[in-house]
Image (cartoon, rainbow, N blue to C red; front, side, top):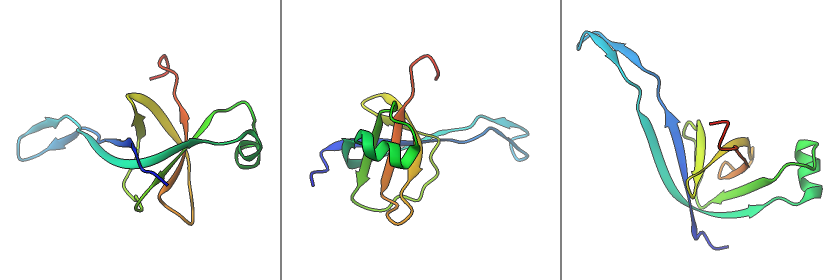
Length: 103
């Protein structure tokens, strides 16, 4: 299996009050980019996992496990939402693309 694509995990932290500075501090955007293997899920398997056949689900497989917090994922600057992470293999993510108008 070739891990020739790149996936970026994005975590947006919330703003908070810093008593040392005496003001609110803006949240940060933390990005982690890792190599992955991408493929699409077939219609039959999509129906088994999600109960719908009209979705286009992308499967991202990582070389190593990933346990970090994820708000959304970027692949080629396209935003994806995590629908499911494999329970027994934490390096497998089922993603659905987010329309550009919904961001």
